Image (tube, rainbow, N blue to C red):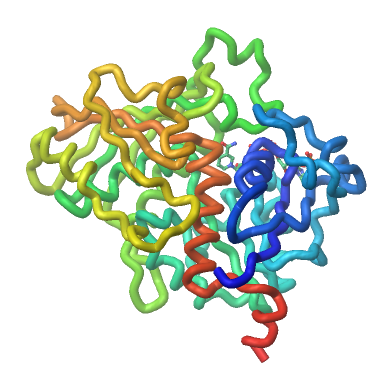
Length: 358
Ligand SMILES: NC(=O)c1ccc[n+]([C@@H]2O[C@H](COP(=O)([O-])OP(=O)(O)OC[C@H]3O[C@@H](n4cnc5c(N)ncnc54)[C@H](OP(=O)(O)O)[C@@H]3O)[C@@H](O)[C@H]2O)c1
């Protein structure tokens, strides 16, 4: 990158917004120049508006910034969105129409035909969908998947390539931070399992078909995979675990599956994106790994762990995945998406975008 890009964060005060702040504080390509949140926060300093839950102090420069309303006019080249889905639809549309690239975590546009649902190691070619978008400006929207879907699909990609995947059954154990902040009341969460997360099973069922679909002639043909999901909230702080069984098209031993996961050639190899982890998938051999408390921060939260690969008595193979829900499954995934887009020429300083359009 010749020049750093100026970034706005929509929903900067939320659980995901705070991870954006932490990941972008010293980013080599992106500089935070705008923060925006609800009327409750707008007009206040970030320090006063946010209920900071990060382990380290708020980066001083950002703590002193004033939070703006979530309206176009922010002084930045593109925006990340960690907005609540109740407002993300309207706000992200307004920003795209005003000419901003929007890199979103929210669910609202994930399944729209011309919007990429992107994991750079899984489906980088899907960014070509951006060219199909028309918001009446040069703005666009790119989304990242539901946080549990990310862990599942990162494991399915190598298996789909090596053996074909037909059926998937996934049971999740999802962390409390996945519900945002303040999120689930402590008396509901402590010592308990809640066998329902609104909308989650639908996302896990539909999003993998788009993510693993084929992009050609400006559209995605969804992958022919059937996913059944059961989603549970458990008293874990960070890290979504999924217990997964798959039916493969071609027979494979557990050792062949482990090898396919280990040897998966990331399409990001050689691109030197700052947030790409050295190891995309960490394969655990220990029978009781991966565990959220011990392994969620592998690769600074960007590595997906897969363990317990073994035969399945009902389908073919079963295994366990672990993903950091607010990093790889949210803000970190979005930052990696933006890095790929910047490298591919989709993000540039606003003045350069205007000149390129003229
Ligand atoms: N948590 C995860 O693991 C995770 C993973 C993947 C995707 N996501 C998605 O990411 C988004 C953010 O999740 P979160 O967990 O960070 O939620 P959160 O902690 O509840 O934060 C929501 C953010 O949206 C802002 N907001 C709420 N109502 C608004 C309004 N009417 N106008 C403008 N801004 C408003 C809030 O601002 P105020 O503080 O000013 O109210 C806050 O900054 C959601 O769409 C979620 O589904 C979350």
